[in-house]
Image 1 (cartoon, one colour):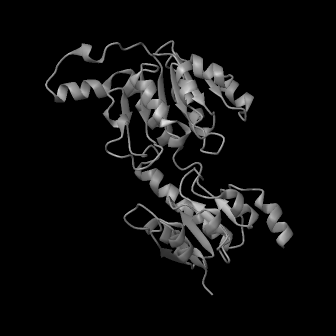
Image 2 (tube, one colour):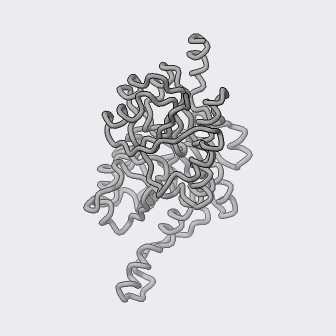
Image 3 (tube, helix red, strand yellow):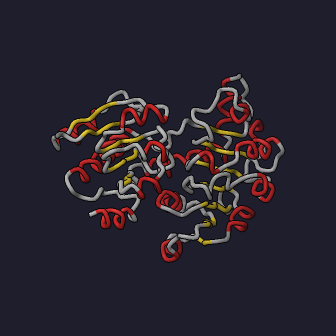
Length: 328
């Protein structure tokens, strides 16, 4: 019987890159647009493999999967999948951690530069007919300031490399960081409290987990410099948005550049969108034509790997090997 491969949901106009990979291996792809747990169960219960974007694959969904061997998610984050339950069920979970490293690091730098140079303020003023350099006062010189990374994974490492000639002190907090890698990059590893207190620009790169949810909230904003900027290209719920609004309105920090939000898409009436010291983008830091094709193709290749009897290239739950060994 030909394996059943279901795409739970997708925001692309078609699935041409995925189909090219899947059909070259002799398999078929089934499209769905699941939004609820019930819809996911109905579409995927008898699937041999699942490609996932935003639909939540909860424990309730995973418990109903009769023969699923692998779940492959577009991009880096795994917050749509109950990875623990999938692992317990002997299901490979895979992602694509290297598909948009350049794009996300570039985007974070773009947000930083736009904030540091008042680009949004100047653009709005010019469109309103105002020619006046003082509308964005006060702007500070970037050289000599401290760029801080919350997590020092591959995206932060690329960002540090790209910013290495800007005359910055670069620090990071990451209990899992390779000390030798940080040292080679000229990055000082510091405590979380020191990162928060000393960063002039704080760039957030941690994944979303139970431990990192609202990791930045009122306490952290109160400890930051009033001139500090915060960038988030990771996951929205890492930052407490209500606390962020309070900090921005109350002058606890100077501005924020945000590509991700607690609820997406963000509502048009959200207070963050009315603040002049905030620059936003619609969770697009990952995107270029090249990265989109790479992510989609590699997501599909993870599926083919498993259905052809191999581990996925980008295995995200290596502990599943123990479960599968017992089952074998």
